[in-house]
Length: 206
Image (cartoon, rainbow, N blue to C red):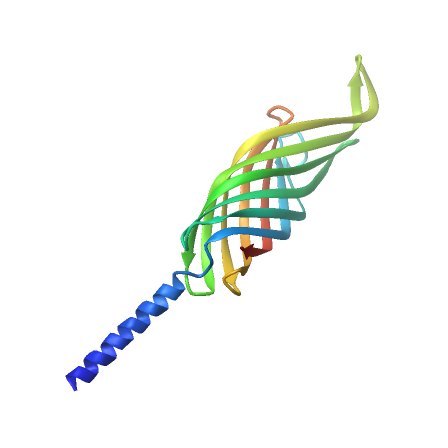
């Protein structure tokens, strides 16, 4: 009787160990590529009293393309390109639009919860390019005329992200994630631009 109990116990332990081992390797190691689309939010902070409300938000469709290397079931490094779309606002007779995009690199820490499902967090740096275009009153040689001006700002910002991934196979997975791309100054210190992205993407590991 004791030998049967011991055999069953050993079998149960081996089964549990096997299940844990499978759960701890939810995806294939190696190079991967992915592409996604989602909700892109742009937030512009203005000095108090400059515009009514002092703060505006706008959203657009954001797109991303990414790739990286999965070292094991816990760690990965990833590169990405993100297009945040366009933010627009109006001040009196002047109309402004800001289009932002950029490239970043981040380290990723995975938490496997099962053979198919895992959570992850990421932290890195992001080189952002923001192009502002204004149509309205322009000062030239001391005179105010109606025209157009543009400004391009490049900056390097910290980025963080959180997400979840469902692995259909070792090669194909579906990812949902939220990323925040820091703040950069537009037109000196008068305008502060913040970008974030909530996206869904498909990833393929080679």
